[in-house]
Image: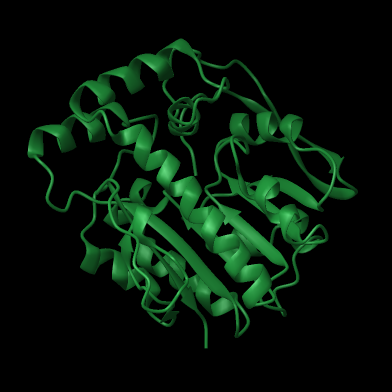
Length: 286
C-alpha cells in the first residue's frame, strides 16, 4: 500500500497478460508530494522516484542511516520465503497487498525462478502507482496489478481482476510486507487481516513484515515517522507483541517472529546480525 502522488483519475479497462483489470489513468500528478512506494524504491537503488522522495529519504538517512539496509533485508526475506512456499509447501498463487512499485527484486521477478507457471496479483491503493506498475509488468508468469485498499478487504477479495487470476478455494500466499505500519489503529488493521484470513483456504500462508520501534531512540523514530508522513498515512511503529496479533488464526512457521535479517525456514537455524527496524514472520492457516 502506498500513499500520495495522486490527483484526479479516470477508470477504464485494459487487459494485463490476458486478464481484464481496472486501468486507472492518473490526472494531474503532484510531483512535489512524497510517496512511500517511491521512497522505498529510492532505498533499493531504483529510478522510479522524484526529487521530493529523494529529499525525504535523505532526511531520514540523516537520522537513521541503516534504513536502506532494512529495505534490502525485506527483499532478502522475500527471497528466502518464496522458495520455501513454492518448493516445500506447493504454493502457486501469490497476492501481494500494498505492493508499491513492482521493481527491484519484487515477487514477479523472484517467483518464476522456482515456478514459471505461478500466478501473482499485486494490489495497491495508489492509482498512480498502479498505473506505473502496469507499465513495468510484462511477460510470464501470469501477473496483474489492481487498485485496492487494505482497509477495504471485501472490495479487494471481490475485485474481478483479482478473481480472474487467483482461486481462493486453493491455497494462496498472502503477502503484506512493510504495509501494515501505514494503517493506524482507527482503521482497524487487525480486523482487516482477519477478514483476509477467513477468505483463505486451509494451507494458505500469511507473509508479513512490519516496522518497529523496539529499542530505538525517540528522535530517530520521530524523524522517520514524520518524513514518511504522506497524503494519508504515516508510519505506525508496533511492538513485537502487537505484530504477533496479526497472526491470530495462523500457525507460525519457525523461527517465528524475528527481525528481518533473521528469518530462515530451517528448524533450529537462526540468522544473526542486521538491522532492528522491522519484524517479519510467516503463518500457515491450519
